[in-house]
Amino acid sequence: MSRRRRAVLLLGLALVLGGLAASDVARRESALRAELAPLVDVVVARRDLSAGRRIAPADLARRPVPARFAPAGAAGAPPELLAGGRLAVPVAAGDPVGPGLLEPAAPPPGAGVERGERAAEVVAAAAPGSVAAGARVDVLVTRDRGGAGATELALQDVEVLAVRAAPADGEPRRAGGSSVAATLRVTVRQAVYLAAAGAFARELRLLARAPRDRRRVGALSAAG
Image 1 (cartoon, rainbow, N blue to C red):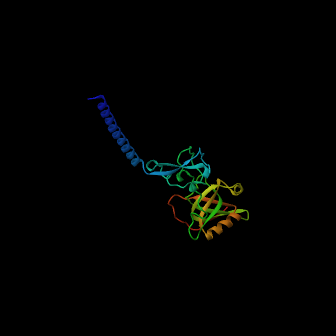
Image 2 (cartoon, helix red, strand yellow; image 1 turned 90 degrees about the vertical axis):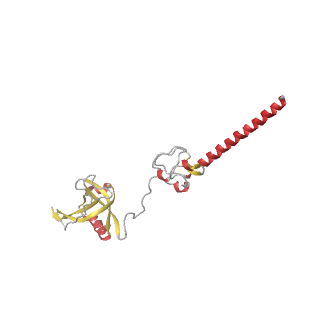
Image 3 (tube, rainbow, N blue to C red; image 1 turned 135 degrees about the vertical axis):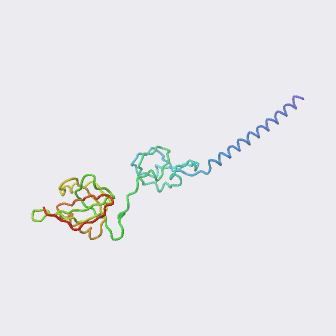
């Protein structure tokens, strides 16, 4: 075989092998694209964001990633819905930002009460740590009667919607134990009664009930 013929054969073989290699690469790329597709936009942090930061639009960017690798809740969350929210945890630059990383929004006014009910706040004495949101309490009212205090069981089995530390101006009304500011689920009539008692009574006191104890007793009062 002549040198020229051998060169032509080698060139042809190289072209065939190159074509096979290119076809294999294209096939692998196609399989990889099929495995990774489709791409989705994920909202990420442009810079390091600290916990408690209120998110601004400039803090966020979009980054396309394969859907299978997108964090739950981060894909498809418009930046406009995240802007203005407050971060509950720190987020590093480039990390996804989704609704699950935000502090829960404050409930709207009146949340937790039904038709005919009211949310009434009282400053009252209570045993330390005994009153928490979701607890049920009885309300005792102590009035002054000619220098002697008269205490009555005013309300029974009232649900506590929220509780926080009592304001400083509530401390003088405390006769013993700790003082709390509690929001109670009550009727309109009970709300009016509590408002009057808070203005004129010497003390309001909350007595925590045992879980699932819904029993009621008759009218009770005692003079001191």
